[in-house]
Image (cartoon, rainbow over all chains, first blue to last red; front, side, top):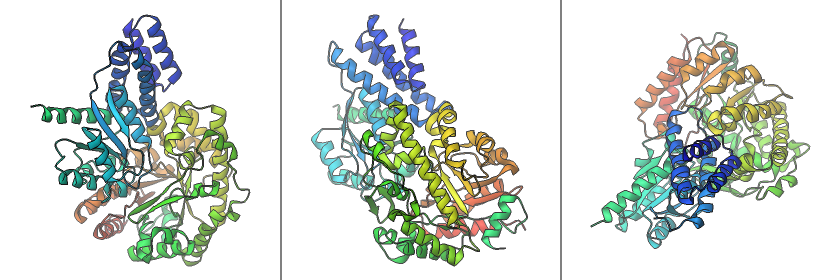
Length: 225
Length: 342
């Protein structure tokens, strides 16, 4: 039964058909599938399948990324109140667009996937200063700062990721808080993330979730005595 | 031959001494005039002067009338712009904040009388007077399917496109398409030679092949049919679109394609063949960190692929302000040297 549900849900998500995906979930619940199974055996594996499809399917596209993320977070938010026990939180991330950058789509795709994958995400909005990124990451005890930048000058500028990196170093936080970037300029120059001092980058919003979770685990490993 | 004659020869596959070499140093114009971006973009005469000086300094073929992407949204009421002195301006306050705002959008009857067009018109007049007989003048026009991203933000536009009411989506697209038709007519009347049709939603990497056929293509037809495709260049905002070139050729008959650096130029050239002009575009974001030698090598690679059989143009993408001067010279020197047919 679960295999059919997984297949139907995946087809709906890949076709960007939100209503069909939600119907699959409703049908699954009616058939006795638990909310936990919906999230951990249907929704999260669908995101992971999309991660691998992006690399292999020439027709993978931005609309699909957006809908995968939005459907995932919508279903997860509906399922969480039905959980018998609170799920284990993977970690915490603060995310925003770089100083001077107002493009919020990439951030939204990443946030949706992370929430579905049990990562706490705090959205700092657009045009975020370096100080605000760090102050909030420290205040909230986040393991990762995510910075989205769609323009070259906001990806590379002195007020963006470079300044966040400098402040992390000044405050001795580089082992405690990792820095990840994403956005179009990094796709055109895959070495750019290193030039601006990031620990990692992601080629798209879906795979960003995987990269961020790996960084959270790295920080937690470092923190474990 | 003048640069304009060289471009016309490339389009028609006629003999010429070299390929056309296009470049876009937009925000660099403000630096050239010692102005802030806000001062520079406030007046069409500044932009014209900046672009004439950039072309004279570097020697490439074309002249741009584009102020910044987002300027078009001002024709539909957008006002606030976030300027930056190290990069391009952003639309800072979207004119569509809620779906109900779509009904309030009004496409001006005569866009050339709209205050947002006046400075563009001034810029065009100067460019036309100073160089219109010898150098190609370029304009940038946003396709109906991409204009909503400038009016409401990409996030809200995708939300409406993927989950919103179809009638509301179509009402917005009709208005954007009507604006496009008026813009393209106004640019042609002003003597523009090259009309860069910016259509990121005209690529499967944005919407997938199925939606490209059912959604993007019909709207592109609506945009282009009344005025025709003379001078139109298909450009997807640097996103790859080789997968749809055949369909665009067959259904829209556009004659020039500005290929993404993420696509294979050889594949694009093979698809387009002698049916149109293939524009090979350098990944100019990498130029920020390349050496002049690396820059020259990439130009050589592109020209060796593209110029065989003619109908080829060398062009640039976003030309960030952070590109070192030496690399701009290296790129253009190499394009003129490698693009020669002698």
